[in-house]
Length: 309
Ligand code: RIB
Ligand code: CA
Image 1 (cartoon, helix red, strand yellow):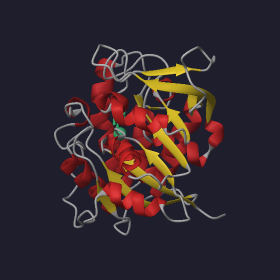
Image 2 (cartoon, helix red, strand yellow; image 1 turned 45 degrees about the vertical axis):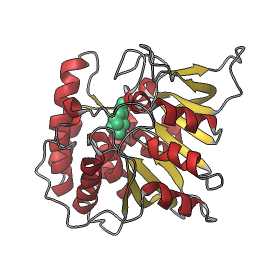
Image 3 (tube, protein in one colour; image 1 turned 90 degrees about the vertical axis):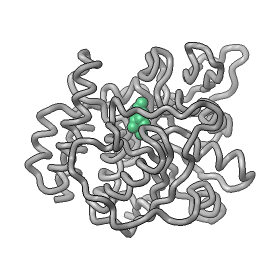
Image 4 (tube, protein in one colour; image 1 turned 180 degrees about the vertical axis):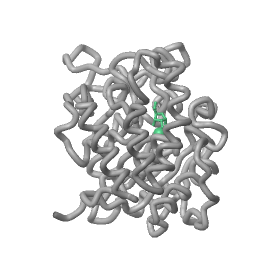
C-alpha cells in the first residue's frame, strides 16, 4: 500500500499536536510537511510548537514552514485560555533544535501544488494560509482538502461560530467558494470525538510519547471539564481530520453548500450549511461531517499514540 501524501496546516495547539503525532504514527500516511498559522497562539509560538512536536516524535526530517501571523481582515485573537501562553502548556517539552524553513508557507504550498503530485491538504487552524494561497496564485491547487472548522449547530468561540472559522471568516469563505473537494469536520462531529481520562491514563503508561500526550491532555482537559460539563471527555477536534483519512468509515458525511458569515455581527464566522437547495444558496461546495463512531476513534488515538513508544 502506497502511503497517502499529506500536508498539515495547523496552529499547535494541543489537539493539533496530537494530530501531528497521529499522522507520523500512521504508515498509511506520508506527512510531507507542516505549515503553521497564527490561531491558538501567535505564529512564532505555533511554529515553535510544531517543531517541538516533530522532534518529540523523532521526525525532524519533516520540514516546517511558517505562514500567516494575522487574519485577512480581523484582529488576531489567540486561545490562551485553552492552550496556555505557549500554546502547548502542560508537558515540559524542550526547545526545538531545528528551525522553520526560510520559505513562507504560502509560497511553499504554491510551488508544491504546481507539481503533478497533490498531497491532501489537511487544515486544522484558521484558514489564512489556504485562503492566501487561493487569493495570490491562480493555478496551484490541492485536489482535496480536509479541514477542521465550522459547525452545523452551536459554535464554541461564540454561540454561532467555531474558532478556526471565526478567527478568519474571509479566508474561510475564500476556501469554501473555491469549490474544491473539501471536507468540513465541524464541532457536531468533534464534540463526539472525545478522549476520556481512561484513554489518557492508557497513553500515560505507554511510553515516552504517550506520557507527553497524557500531560498535554491533563492541561487541555482542564478547560473542557470546566466549560463543557455536558461532554464525557475532551474533544479531539484536529485528530479527527487524520482519523478520517485513516478510516473513512468512522465518520458520516453529506454534501452541502456552505457560506461563511463575514459580517461583524454576533454571528460572524458562522458556517451556514444548506443541503436543501434553498434559494440564494449555491450548489454543494463541501462534504460536511455529520457523526463519528467516538469509541472507535478514541481507540485509534490510543493505539497509534502508544505505538510511538
Ligand atoms: O474549534 C476548535 C479548533 O480551534 C481546533 O482546531 C483547535 O486547535 C483550535 O484551532
Ligand atoms: Ca487547531
